[in-house]
Length: 313
Length: 105
Image (cartoon, rainbow over all chains, first blue to last red; front, side):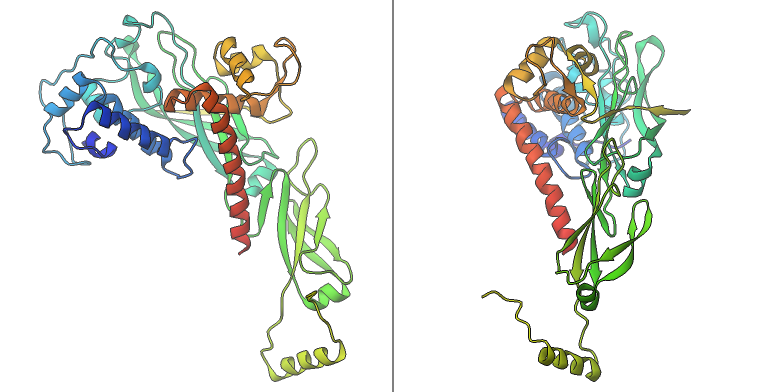
């Protein structure tokens, strides 16, 4: 397993005061909190920062950690020294904090696996504790959101082993994604969250949906937006065009004499739901390049035969 | 490692999902008092006058959980929570908007 340099993770030196450690932690926790940060690896960072703080905020665990010596590098291959043993202090680790999910193997090797020390319950928590709710994001294609799909998630879990100990593992969970789900919506999966403590019930799992960027569509709520490039003569004379929707191609009519930015609404062609969304098509007139003498001549002729001032100033 | 052949079907937390106080309490695993506080500070805005008439929707559960996480993990106090959540939601909307505009180029 890899050595974790908790001081480096918090960006403090080994002699930092308790106050400095707390300050550094709070700053990083705000920065990487998954509800605040938009960075894709925010959750991993947040866990790491929490783990570091759990160890360094308690004088006893900090002292034990310091005993490993300062000769280690972050990420270096690590094995606990022979005969290593750590007793939790009276307060132990805060189970609420530990519920933030899966501390590293490195942490477990020094401070014992979650729940194995008997620190839960012996102090201020008497009996059962409901498992924590887990929250994770899944990215879907618009096509999957339109038609519904099925996803298999790999969840880091702790399952209840013998003697009330829990062991880390990976669990596969196949989840049905209903059709017409929108960006930001969540799916609650009862009893797929963290394992309860002392026989307490399992928490729930919450999946928050995000959409992967699409080459030509984008979604706002249930509405789907498409920018449609058209030629000046299509805009001027009208046209029948085949365009894509999430449900397949459809024919649309471009009215005579549209301007760039003109919007066409295709009712019910957006994401399905109690009230299905619409597809909104925004027309963009593209200018053909004057790339040949004939084309240039044609533009000159247009300028002559149909004088036109598009400006109001 | 175990693999689960069953396909889990969850509950979609959208605005068509209707939850009364007891449904919300059961799904969020917090005390009723906590929910009442969240209503008082404006994190949750149920329909109905009294707690027995309150009706929440799926978004409210997601909001409540976000509030609980921010409170627990960042130590944000109650008055700060409502502001924080409003700002985060506004920021998410603006982010989405920016993404769309950038995509258009």
